[in-house]
Image 1 (cartoon, helix red, strand yellow):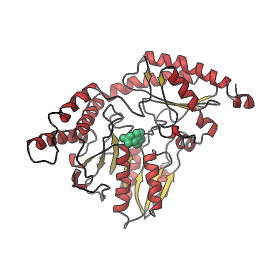
Image 2 (cartoon, rainbow, N blue to C red; image 1 turned 45 degrees about the vertical axis):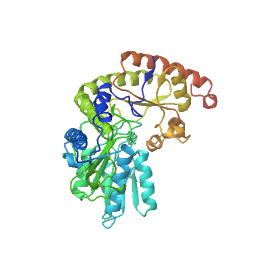
Image 3 (cartoon, protein in one colour; image 1 turned 180 degrees about the horizontal axis):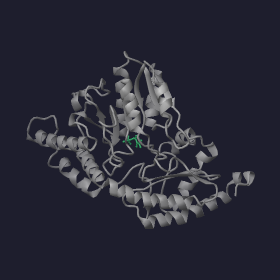
Image 4 (cartoon, rainbow, N blue to C red; image 1 turned 30 degrees about the vertical axis):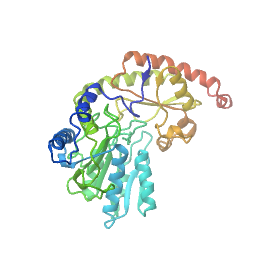
Length: 388
Ligand SMILES: *Cc1c(COP(=O)(O)O)cnc(C)c1O
C-alpha cells in the first residue's frame, strides 16, 4: 500500500464530492446565464454553493467570486486592487514567505511601477507586527499576508494584521488556501478585505477556487467578457467544480475540530521520532502550526534524494514546495527563516490528510531514519564536515 503524505500539494477528491458533482455534468448541464429551465436549475445549484461557502467565512453570498483556483484568486486580488487604486497610492506590503502566486504577481507589479515592501519573518516564520506598522505609509494601498504557509505550516496572526490595516484604512488580502476549512476564518472579526481559497487542497476538484471581496472594495477585473460573477470575473462558471468545492468545504468545515485533533497527534508523533535523528531540526513554529504539517531539515542530506528514496519505498512526500522542487534553488521560505542553504536543501515536508493513520505514521518513522542513514553514507559533504 502506498502512503500519500503530500496533502498540501493536492488531495484526492472525496467520493461524496464526486457524487454531488455528477448531475451537473449530465442532467443539470445548463449555462447559469441562460434564462430557460436548464439555466435556472444550474444557477440555483451554483447560488446554493455560493451561500454555503459564504456562511463558512461569515461573508455575504455576493462577496464570493468563483475563480479557477488559488493562483487566479491571488492574481485577481493583487492586480485588481493595485490597478483600481493607483490614484490613491502605489505601495503594497507582502511577506518574504508568500506563495509564488503572490510573490511573482508582486514582481510583475513592480515592473508596472508599484513599490513592494517584503516583510521579514522570524525564525518561526512569523512577521513582526511593528515592522508591518512602520512599513505602512500614505501611499500604501494593500497588505497581503498569507494565513498559513504551505511549506512550513506557520500560522500568521491575521486578526492582528487585519486590525492594523483596518485602523490605517488600507485593504488586507490573505491567501487562506492552506487554512480554509482547516482553521476558523471570520472575515468580519478578522477585518479581511479580500481572501483567496482553492478547492483541490480540501478534497475538492482541481481548477476551482474563490476570492472573497468585501462589499464596497474598489477592484478591477482581469478577465473581461460577459460580466459573470458580479462583473468581476467573466467566463461561464465551472458549475460542477463549484458544486464539488462547496460540498468538500461543507464536509471539511464540519469535521474541522475533530480532524485537527486527530492529525495533531499523528503530526507530533512523527516530529518527536524524527527529531531523534542526528543533525535534524524542525522548521517553523511548534505552537502556531497547521495540524497536518511536518517540515524538517536533515543536515548533509539532499532533499531530492530523500524524496526519491521515500517514493521508492511507497511514501509520497515533498521537499520545499511542489513548484520549487523542480529547481535546484533552495526554498525561499526556508531561506527567509534564516536557514543556511545546506539545511534548506535537506528539507522534508510531510503533510497529513484524512486517510493517514497510525500505521502510516509507524511506517514513516521506521523508513525515514534508515534512508537518511544510507544517504549520509554516500554524502561527500559528510566526510568533509564530519557531521556524523
Ligand atoms: C496551492 C496553493 C496556491 C495555489 O492554488 P491553486 O488552486 O493550485 O492555483 C496558492 N497559495 C497557497 C498557499 C497554496 O498552497
